[in-house]
Length: 234
Image (cartoon, rainbow, N blue to C red):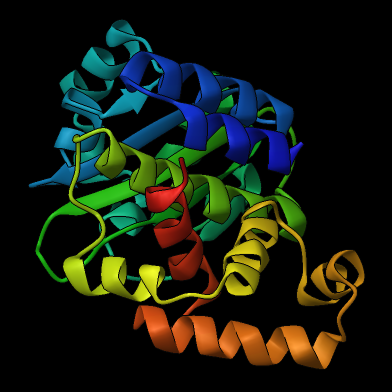
């Protein structure tokens, strides 16, 4: 499921194909809709001018008209630098966001995931997926992070957003064929232990290679490395 979604995103040649791949991937992960924004100047643009979305124009106009961009806790999280947020409707039942609880109850939502993708450039980005089920599992959180960052990298590859700098590109060229294969399996959601079994190596050997990959690419996390892989994937 995740591997197929990543493969389709990496193969997308334009925004139409990428939107179709994200729509299928969103549904495969058990969500009913998504909103992807990259390179935005303000949080309000997440709703008025999303990069790719399944949310209708009418829904976004109503959201803006009713002033939700000023009191939506998901939007506040999306424009921040915190970790991925997995939530369920009852999280907002008590406290300052009870009006948001009533809002999402009225539209039948039960939970969702918001993956912030903000960088030091000051441009804002995030992926939000909404569900009719309860709080998403940790596996789906991990999958959403991979999908979000792979999609952002693919946007850069087709000329929509500059997501990967020259140093990362040079670092990718410095990876060995073995290290590129490890990244390929990581992008498909495989753990280091899984990759070891697939490639006939020990878990410790994969750990070593992954550390070397991060060092060559000049990044601090596995997800950032996957972003760069997606950027260069043919």
